[in-house]
Length: 586
Image (spheres, rainbow, N blue to C red):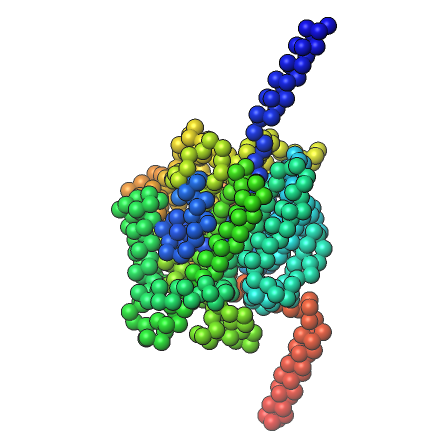
């Protein structure tokens, strides 16, 4: 009996020791920047001070060939589900969706009921989950974060808002800004700056759950650098004079730094976009105004990085940092729209005076010329299928056993992140069913093999990955990309590029590779058919569609009686004028 007890005690001690030696499942922090260009981060070649994000890059892996959708909601839907946006319900932004598409399969403008989020799966497996910031994948009750796997949540349901005044709309396309906390309308503070507030809430939720003993999944969706560009004055003043040489010089400097860092080939050609103005042709006053725009843009990015640093400092103080994996990305490329159609409304709501830019009550954008520099050396920007619109920085840091300060150049897609997080947490893919209900299966591939050095590429060279948003199309296959962009950025025709040597899409290879050019078009057609991609109506324009949708979806329902009264008065006035003209003729 004594020997049996001794053997049992030794076995128990060994089991306890083995259990304690088993590493805890990692915490996960996902940081989503808004409208950042490929080289906005210092670790990707930019001049903007982003020391906290750069430190994550130094301790992890930078993905230099990472692709998202060209606007916020489609990207966020794929990030959360690992499912192509045409299959998860967010085939387009609801603001830019043609009326003929709205409500069709894949075109709900919000997540459908056939997908499960990575937060659901992490929550089910024992993670405590939270989100603070921009959501933008649906505000129906079943689509709010409390029903999509998040224990705690403070979210903005819209595409954006003012960064100083939480209830101030940034465009007249909605009747209000929708804020929710834990599934209910949120009471927002009067004293507010978006990046600071979102990190405050993230830290609050982490503190509230600190005694649970559970690992955490924390998602922070920033508004920086979505329009309106706004930042604290102390950050803006740091960039005074930094952009006096203009956007073309900045685009070249960023291209050179990205090449030196190994993010692009050293001989990568640099094209000048047609939408980039001639800096030297500007007047001194115009140059000063344009400089200030970029100073505010840089300040907004640095302010976001500063608050990321506060979150990291909290995790270090709480002892959670060493067991935390960080994922940083931007939801799409830089915003190149000129917002000309919105100017009449903006002038009534905001100041655009030089001395006020960045402050409360002021509104500025970067515009297409600075956007070309933010995306350097890539071509295009937000909303378009050029690399500048859909290739963004991705950093993953804190993976156990992963090499540090590495660049991974193989083709990577936003749908790859969800399966990566599941593998990190030791959770099996749900496949095509969840809790007895059919769901869309994740299309992405885990990045763990390339993160840990077990593989050199994420996707096989013969795997075709299709893409469409607002009539702008692409198909990736190995190093090759087939792409078609609508006017004014594109010509509506197919082009073929080798992204390994020409990420700026300067040399069309369709004549050199006619068979591949044709076969990739067939691959795209197969993707479009299998994913229910709808053709855009003749004459479609995203900016015009925003105005149409604003009127139809929001202003008529919200102000039906005044609108009808105005229309009645107009009709009556026209009728009276017609009768007078008739009487005069008679």
